[in-house]
Image 1 (spheres, rainbow, N blue to C red):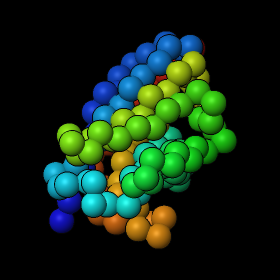
Image 2 (image 1 turned 135 degrees about the vertical axis):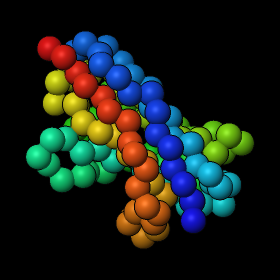
Image 3 (image 1 turned 30 degrees about the vertical axis):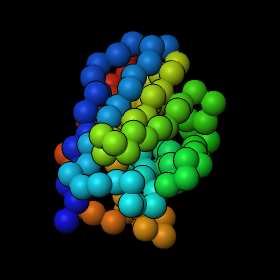
Image 4 (image 1 turned 90 degrees about the horizontal axis):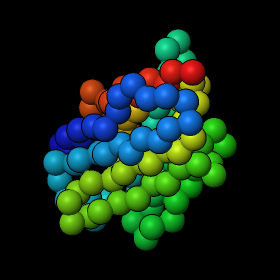
Length: 117
């Protein structure tokens, strides 16, 4: 069982940036794909970015062009950097390891990002 711990969120102003970290309790370099999700109040959890084992990066329309996902396998950590934050980016952000594009492990507690206008 892999445990995932997200961090880096907080209260930020619109237009600022944030870098989120996802620390896995196991060796992630043998995993295939790691994804960042978010869940806004009253909405379903959505996948916003994922990175494959070979480094391919895919983004949802909502964050494409202002986000960067990266991985540091030696630290079992995956990052999500978002620029030009908008109030609609307000959500709890989660990470998970994906198998066939489905989350594989229990969700962590997530990290709250709140963007004020």
